[in-house]
View 1 (cartoon, rainbow, N blue to C red):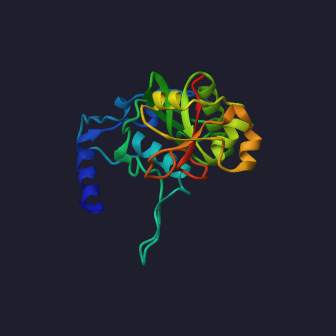
View 2: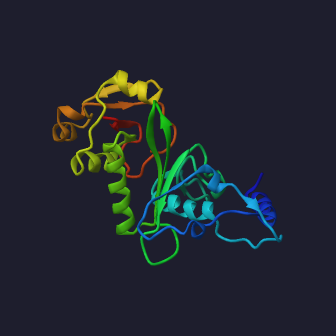
View 3: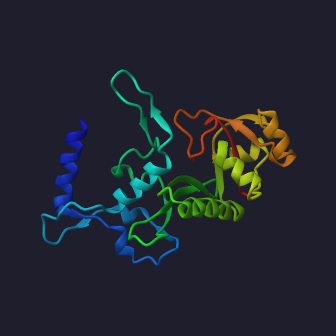
Length: 238
């Protein structure tokens, strides 16, 4: 089905249903609130047709697109430009996807959300997944602070590149350094590396972070930050 057909279907559904908007939560400024998958489910419109508005899935999708704006999904080929974004959420209708636990916050004077994080339970722990932010310093700082706090409180997150470096070097987030424990927490097999494959990082991180591995990831990294999307370390879980 082509994109224009998808849009027509979406418009028709919206004429019959009403979805929640961020404003419906009456969230205090600066406070992180929890979202559930049900919050993305449409509600019956009392007096159809209902006008098309920016609903929660649109608002959160914009944050995700911004956070993954530099992550290439497909390269430019001929007259077709490259596409960028998150491999798992490529349109508002993909939300909430497989994410069972989600959080968001409004940090500034406008009425829109500025920070978003989604994840799910894995191996008995909360596993951090997708992130979204509006690109502002406040939202990026909230993303970093919330990520570190979650990881230091028992959550786990597969990370690589810039975000892994920040969590290790700035926040001192611990790592899982046993292949058996990594596989148990992820429920998947990994190809164990141990020390970071780049010596300058291996020396910088030291023996407490010899937990790097690779596994069969076909799409871009789960978190922003670049680096080799296949070489990761499991942070938190301690």
